[in-house]
View 1 (cartoon, helix red, strand yellow):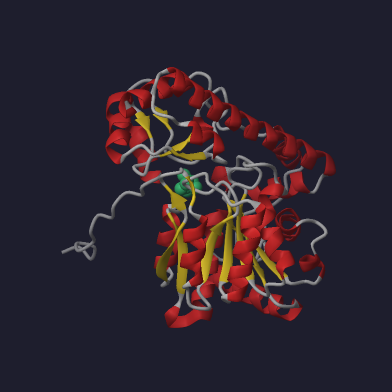
View 2: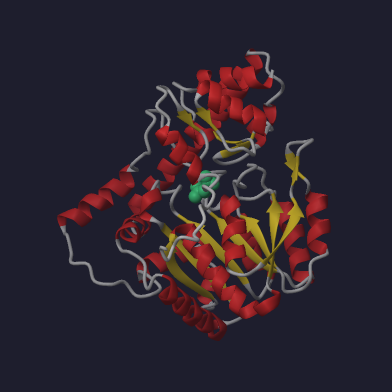
Length: 400
Ligand code: LMR
């Protein structure tokens, strides 16, 4: 009998597993609106010109590859701190932020989850928005957290249930970790405005909850700085401790390079130093140290005034194209006489929580070869002028 005879088949991942099904689908004209990726007008992942320029310079001066430090490339970490917290952040000047390069945003979540579990011990609890990105639950459950939910999305208005959110968070035990999406909430596309962030932060502070901000889509709602409003307000609030995971997968279109970072804010320089030592210990136990290439690309862009400005422009072009696709989709659906989808214009980022039922999503897949998540989440960043009419006609047909 094989040692592995008792191993059971694990279920496929609801997002990446769907991409596997999509790739195996032999129907011509199939469309993948399942996974959160930005696809350009030509139907391709963009290679940003700013990134390409750094890549060419790196290739021209190819260097041997030693190990990076456990916490990653120092320039990358410094530039990441500036992008996330703002270049003039008093937190950075005070040395209160411990940042490490991680294997994508998921790597940051996982390292933080392991470390926070060590700190919180047997009673570790995390509150996650209902709904949220499915992997949030998986990562924190695997790290040994008890998962709690707070209200977030109001299906009736297709908007935020802010009163419900505050009520649920107000009941949490002190010390509970609260997972927040910085912007472009995944899967709903529904974000907090500045006044709501302020109210939320006051509650987190009063209840002594630990804010944990996941920023996977910085720049996809309104711009790199505005999208970090929640982080900047937390930094200004006087809260002693909070955590930020950020990713460059989307903002630099570097999905496969796995470039992200974990930043943990402590009460003072000494606490941040101890946090960094623990982050390094956790990374070493998981994957030893991160890889060089993606971080070199990001650091090369962010470290050059000229390339950084170009990158912000390229990011702005992706953002504008998504806005145009949202508007075009809504108009097209209205012209086809579908029920009102105007709320899609009010949602931010790559996703729209379309309100389509699981049965309707399955009809899209089976009858039209259009892939969306069972929750009804569609990736509007994968729409373009060639597939917009096809998708709108199919959505109108299944929702009519
Ligand atoms: C998504 O939500 O589709 C993306 O964040 C990709 C992923 O890893 O799930």
